[in-house]
Length: 209
Ligand code: PRP
Figure 1 (cartoon, rainbow, N blue to C red):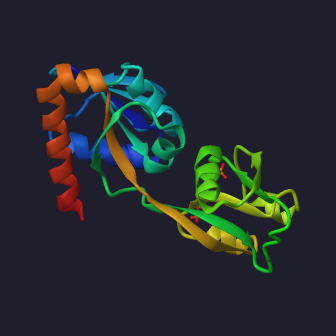
Figure 2 (cartoon, protein in one colour):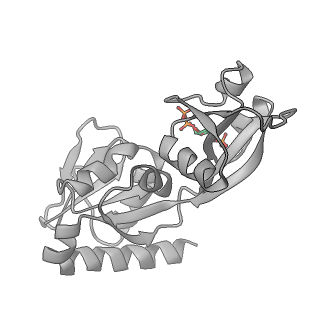
């Protein structure tokens, strides 16, 4: 039995669809159900639905053998897991953004609002720029609009949120996409099962492109 942690939401549903198409279907699964664990009849796989940012925690701690997590989360929390494949879904970028008329004042620390504090710290450290971090949990775009930060470090997908709040991208940190990750012990002790799901999923993703 391979335990799989999937992120709740559109991305998780897309990955579940691919997995069910390649034979790992759970008859009892329904999109509208509030149930969080599903197993297939053959007893090959079991799925857990978790908050996207928690997938890596379940995988690192071994509750799930494999899971699907965004590269943004992996970069931010650096969980001790193996990254097996780029699923090429949920593509977006980690960016620095600011108000349209922003001008950097190098004489004082840059106020950076973000959910991704480690990612922001690393980026500005490498640049040698002093910053003051403001940790927020959502609606990050509000911070410069209301004047509590100079810039934000956040995910940009379509760019609509930035545009509608008079913000623009002033720096690109990295490209983000969904990754298949594995628990390190599971990779060793359930190697056959983990690798075969990984390979089948990789092929299914390529056929989707
Ligand atoms: C994410 C991100 C941006 C938005 C970007 O927010 O933090 O706010 O999506 O998408 P766009 O470029 O397509 O507009 P999310 O919806 O996850 O909510 P949050 O504000 O609570 O982080």
